[in-house]
Image 1 (tube, rainbow, N blue to C red):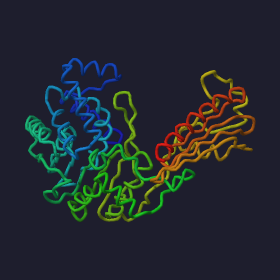
Image 2 (image 1 turned 90 degrees about the vertical axis):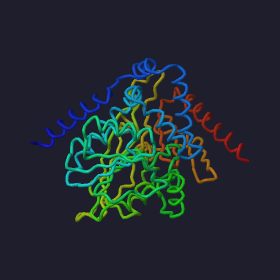
Image 3 (image 1 turned 90 degrees about the horizontal axis):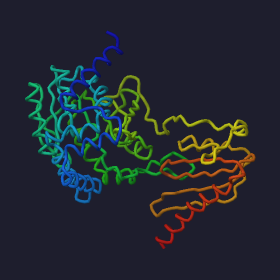
Length: 408
């Protein structure tokens, strides 16, 4: 059987498994939220959104997160809630499951209600699988569903790895959406707005590990690996500012890349996520070592061709050229005969920088923005509409000035 055929069969099996759980693929936000209104009363929806906001703010540690997942682990409401993550389960689960071969003992940490954990155990009956989560209601439902599926190689335990060590050692540890859930943390800034490079700063790394909880979690998981153990990790680290300190935390604990990190893109209904990539890690270095990549991901932004822009028919509400990707920096650097009209660079007390620049290049007007969290934007328009970019520049710099006054 070819790998392609095997992957297709895995996806078909996973789709059937998700359907058994009551999950389905929903195409639009309108359809998804209409489904929620059919399942929940207005009061239940209000309570749900209160818990979502409390979890997002995270002001009381893990309590709000546990309360949220306890609330959502109700059999009646699982399909309407968890179908939002349908593509996540399909894309991540189908990749993870192929790595379970040759792993007698498997740990799925942060397993939630066990949607993927039960799939892993069902697909690999020769593995002994343990699912851990700190939500008691999630574990209760996971146990119930495992029993309904007749899975004798699977058990679940309620345990918080922030507070407790793992119950033993494992040949394979799976951690997806559980190690770095501090979504409001922007990560580690670059040296300045001109570069994507990060300084090697042990204190800054330690602060990142502590404030996100990543350090303790990784230490616990690393201690729970067997001598030849492996880890599969997939977290919210697509942005370079989070990916770099995350990778450095992995490397600092003696976890080696066994394969090139695999980009995984999917949608939560209509919204494209910023997760990934998927890491395959080992406690023992491979024969052929792989290096950690700290560069921005390649993007698909259109290349800048100044001469070609001269023949572009301008649209009243569209620029001639616009690039919001990391490649905007190179395009800005390549602008011929730049004449800077105005520019400002602001710096926050924590070292964050924002640079805004308005100018001319080869008969066009441009606006360029760059910050130390890797956001880049380059816009070019013809001189007849130069006032639009000037207005945009003034709006951005007005916000900078207001922020600086607030700090003074």
